[in-house]
Amino acid sequence: MTRTPAPTDTSAPTPTTVPWPSVVPTGSPPTDATASPAQPRADTGTGAGTGPEPDADTADSPPGADAVAGAGTGARSAAPAEAGAQPVPGGPPAASVAHVSGSGPGGVWEELITSALLGTDRRTPPGGERGPGAAAALLDAAAAETVRRRAGLRPARAAGRPAPAPEDPRPPLPEAAARRLTMLLTDRPGTAGGGRRGSAPDLMELLPQWLATANARGFAAPPQTLPALLDAARGRTDLRPAALKFAGPRALWLARLNPDWRFALRATPGGGTAPPGSGAMERARRLWAEGLFAERVALLAALRARDAVGARELLASTWATERAEDRLMFLDSLRTGLEAADEPFLEQALADRSRNVRATAAELLSALPRSALAARMAARAATCVSLDRTRTPPAIVVEAPHECDAGMERDGVVAKPPAGRGERSWWFGQLVEAAPLATWPDRLAGRTAEEIVALPVSDGWQGELHAAWCRAAVRQRDGVWARALLGAPTAPDAGGPGAVSLAERAKLLGTLGAAERAEWVAGFIATHGLSEAFQLLGMCGVPWATPLGRAVVDALNIARDAGSYPWSFSGVMGLAERCLDPSEAGRLDGLLAIPDEPEDASPGAGGYWAEAFQRLVTTLRLRAAMAEELRAGS
Image (cartoon, rainbow, N blue to C red):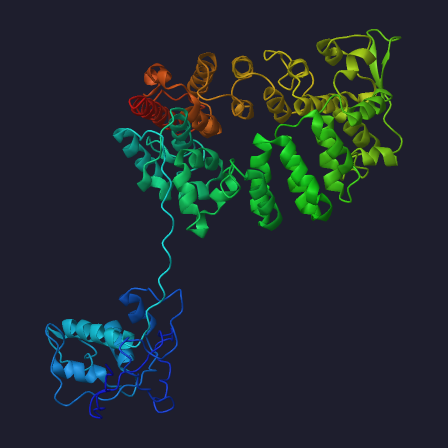
């Protein structure tokens, strides 16, 4: 049937189509209502207005947002209310409705805002009266005006529902461990290191260890903690690997819905990439060709971990068309699973247009002791180092290169030295660093690494030569040469026979096993104390082995009894809170009292030491409780 439109009642208010109010500061001159008369809305039965659609970002804003956003617009055009208008049940009085429906000289909405800002005692609400009910009348009038302003808006098109989150097959966390995780995630980060005051543990610093334990036991993250986990990983890059592994597939599902968490797609192998399975390589090629740079980096890293050949072929397919900075990032991914099969590709990269790409390719090739580049560098370095048997004892003689030729530059030698560095020593260090360490026993009369390091070096070249050997041992992961260059931890010279700095020694320690590292650092602390041990402790596994933990506690106790300046050990104390075995807490009970301060002690040092040890004990016992909570669910 055909519906006949009802006759227009000219005395009734004409509905208007009102766009979403824009933000205009209070006090802006009102728009002249006569300039844009309200247009009647056709009665089509749908209730849709004819005005412009709202912006997508504000179409689903709550009513309160409309009230704030409309302050001071004064751009409404509305016909006066009927003289006989009746109040809405539960709404404002009829007089208020009649006033709000009209448009005053400054705009009704501006008047409401002004009354709210100044207070109803100073400014009577529009259509209201002074008195106890003025505030309620103001809110009622604002609610009615909000409804009127929204009446002409079209509803936004509903977005499609996202696909359901994937299931996480891992077992759930025990209840006590789930509560502990919530506590760790809601804690506010404290002062870095152990320099903060008070005996309360820094819970955020315990989160990495908690995540490592939870991952080792194979638990799934509670769904309600995923947003907080992603926020924590967003703020701390050191947390990302463990946090994203614990969060599991549902975290990736959430990350696709929130741009703030997109880092999870890049940081998780396969997160934003083509997962393994049927047609995986074809999907990988499509993403490699069409994806964003971050997605391509993540794809290459994920593919390299499971299919080194496929990753290398994918990289080679577009290598010539990539930007120099992109080539450098892509080339760096070959560090994972570096193998002899990578040599042909890396050899081609030695001729790259970018100096940084050439240097990275040369570094990777020098880490392959049997590569052609390693052989070339060994031949060059051997001509610079010889053994002078005429001296007693025999000594190493160094003759640094006199020029950096094109072949050396192609193999990654940087010709221009940094400021304050001589050219010849700069070239020499690069040659020795890139040469296989197996070169030197043959070159120096069959001596072992320890015997070679013990040889004197003439003309002041010892520091340069040993520093280059240190870098070579780290690059080639050679434990034999690392031990020789480290020397005995109890040696009188804390610098060691070969390392030129504690930073070099820390890198050399990284080539040794965890138990050997801990034993060496314990011996170093027992001999030299804690003042130079912070970098070395950072290379040791967590929790510290018993000999290392006891060496640290004994050294802290000695420093405390000596009245040493306590803040000098704040970094070591902070490490002890996170790395000392929780079973050592009982040995610390005797250190909780405030000691008698020697006359030359720092003022207040005794109180600080007692407080720091109290925090250490509290943290160790908390870590023990955390481990027990996670163990209970196994």
